[in-house]
Structures are given as C-alpha cells and as structure tokens.
Picture 1 (tube, helix red, strand yellow):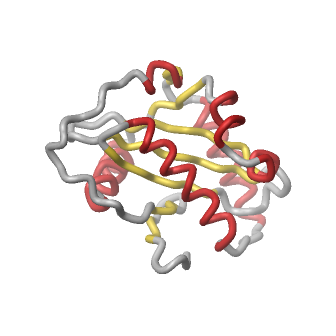
Picture 2 (cartoon, rainbow, N blue to C red; picture 1 turned 90 degrees about the vertical axis):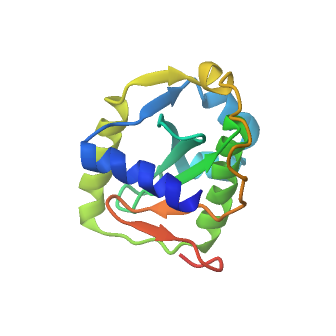
Length: 162
C-alpha cells in the first residue's frame, strides 16, 4: 500500500485537488497525543478520498515554537480509518525524535502558505470520518513504514533515519 498512497498523493498534486481537512479533532488529539508533542506542534488531519479500497490520511504538523522550522507531513493508508489515523500519529513520535530541525527563512513563507492552504480546504468532522465503514480485506494489509512528505518531494523513512 506504500506505493498506492503515494500514487493517491501524487494524483492530488498533479490535478491540483485539495484533501479534506478533518475538523473537531482537538479532544481526540488531547486524548491520544502526548503533552510534549501537543505543545510543540499544531496538528492537522487531512483526508484523501480516492477510488481505491483503502483510506488515505495525511497529518500536517507546524512547529509552534519556531516558524522557521520545516513543517512535517505524514501520509498513511489502511482499510480501517481509525487505525490509519492512529498509525499516522504513532509515526509523529518516531519522526520527532529522529529528525534534525532545518532552520531557514524560506520555511517561514512555506509555513504561512501551508496554514492558509489548510484553512481553505473543504472540511469534514472527525465524527463523520470515524463512522466510515472498514473496507473489506480485498488487499492484504501490509505493515509498512509511513512516509514523511516534504512540500513537494516524498522521503521514505528507512531504518529510523529521515
């Protein structure tokens, strides 16, 4: 499913489509994410509807402490939406511990652009997303590592290194 979620993401980029922003996530994030991460990042969940037999969820993290640090984008896919979202948040812990912060003045503009882009996405409530029925096991669910996506390039996490 690794290649499939990147295919869905690339289709969105090529066609200029925007994913759906999942709203109403504050309580869920508060219950499922550590205090340190909540203090460090603004977290946004995006949903990528597609024609395949799996759900694709994106997670965008903007650093609250320093706007000059590159944002983190995570893409995850799965047949059960709740597990897919949880798996994406599991990778936040790994990425936060392993990543080197790249400070640059150019990221300030990128962060502001991404924030504006996020708020202009169509919206769906978390309650509605979590009510989506699981897809039948047409595809074998393969446990793969998630992707961290730079603004225009996808990098695969290999061996715990970015």
